[in-house]
Length: 415
Image (cartoon, rainbow, N blue to C red; front, side, top):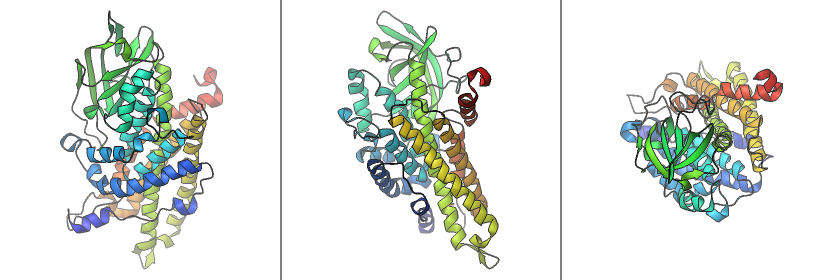
């Protein structure tokens, strides 16, 4: 890549949130975590972001260099208690989702890897026995192993009812045997441990499955529109024999555990959405203050002034929503609704909308990955591609609106 391209890719617009967002909800430890992760993201994630965003999942694979750097920086410790080597923070959820916003500002792929490794797989393992935590959670926190969380299936994604989940766990003389097929499983091609939701009788249970166990096979990585560094793939389970110790928690408690983790994950995705929205907003502000058309700075045109004012209001609301949802989780509310659903819809929808605005503002450069003339890369094209999936995964936004309606109208009306 040419010097021009590198310089363009690494251009850092001013952080507008530092000027116009006043965080009165986060405490000192969360603010310190945010600042620490921002320094890391600026130094490590930003230089790798273009490579990750324009790579090929099958050919280029997992961004192991960034994952290993996060481990060395102890970023995986943020979410966890001190007895397992975590930071033991007063507000671990708040600090974790703040970290995810800062990672997503430069790469939603990296934020998604972190989310699944820590928030989904890691936090689920933290609910296990002392031995399960020692065997699996400690190495995960240290970055020695990579975690994945497998709930979705070819015919079952948002619907995790026992009637819908087709992966089955049956008792054997020595433990359990799993049969099933999981799909869209983040980190699967590189995972060492996979948390698998399976039907056991009339209920669902969660199992700790070593990726190297006989009978476990992982398909080729999916090629996706965006989030190129977030590898997803099918996981096939054929006569996978597990000991009793592989059951996480008690039999039949898997759905409750999965929903709790996915609620936490939705708050994390909301934060990632805000991170991408803020990045697009910052690039737009920079462009409006420097680019001229018809003899005027673009920022002189009232269309853009009013649009940016609206987006600033929406960013304020979306960030405050996800922080509030995380605060409720830190207070012991395992499913903080309706805030979690509201935050997910607000943050992810806004990411898509501002990314689209940014592409429009940047014109041809907004729609271009790389200019053939000099290698200049677009600062917003990847945001447009990466943002869309946040409206889909970890509970589609339509499902989130249904959750909000249920809170408002009650199940007897909303269903």
